[in-house]
Length: 412
Image 1: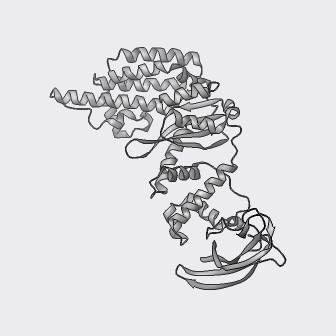
Image 2 (image 1 turned 135 degrees about the vertical axis):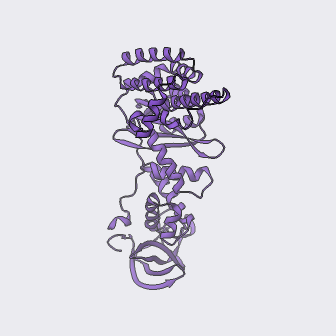
Image 3 (image 1 turned 60 degrees about the vertical axis):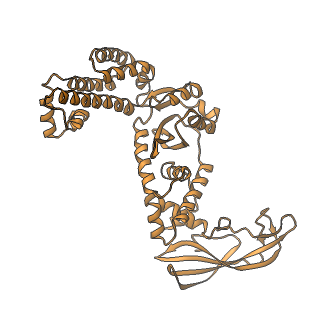
């Protein structure tokens, strides 16, 4: 203990085994160093002693399967400035019965296990794990560095039934990927809060912004971060196109059934939405049969596969020419979902063409990857119902927050 967790002004005394309701434990007494005065809990200045309170136990990092607690009789000081105050304990946080080392220990394990499993493994309660994670997140947010952010990705994240969303902002630079900001709802005010937090100087250093076509995001980026290259996320563009293909298929299935014809498009949803290289052998055979039919869905599928070539262009000029020709074909397809998608592309053409200006400048797929991890994180921390719990869990799991250098659990 003297090696891994030295306490300035205090010394470790005797250590003994004992049995408690939670199992066998090791009790280690802590004593003030001779001649060392107590520190006032109010002003932080060393003061003369007043009296001693009863013994208290503080949970410490478990060793070899044994629970460990530090036992100490807290002193009170007679401070001329603050009055009678309890001394400041360097190993504990306020009135918490856990040492700071144990708090960081639980917070570290809560990244790998669910909060309930962490509590079960280390013979504590869910609330103790939550308080540990809350402390780690609060400390990390206060000590993190927000300089040199060049690329950000913004998206909404569904976290509750009834269309409840969060606005999440990630740093997606190649050398640093992390969660920067979480806010309730997906409104203009929610996204504005990120730039308020970042400040005007850091905001002006942002070079690239990736987002979907949500109007609130487009408006805030234009007004608050106009110097950055605004790029539409490729995943969301293809997601809208896939929905248009599926909507066309379902409408044609209903039309075939109403006409008394065989609905040959049933159970072909994923065959039409998958990339050809990802199809299984049976699915390839079925697709080869489908493309021989003169159906609107087949024409829409062929247009979808043709649109994939857009991402392979290397110049803005080539991408603009391809987009113009593709939009014209989609508008002549007599397929309403595809025509609506083409109109969407036409309305957001500048942001779409910025894809070529920002190619390779940031991690393009990081935003959606973070969203998948965010869903896993909220499932691992199941049991909460409030927004604050979700916010803490996301920062803890995805924020890549700093930790103190003295952490005891690293001694191995």
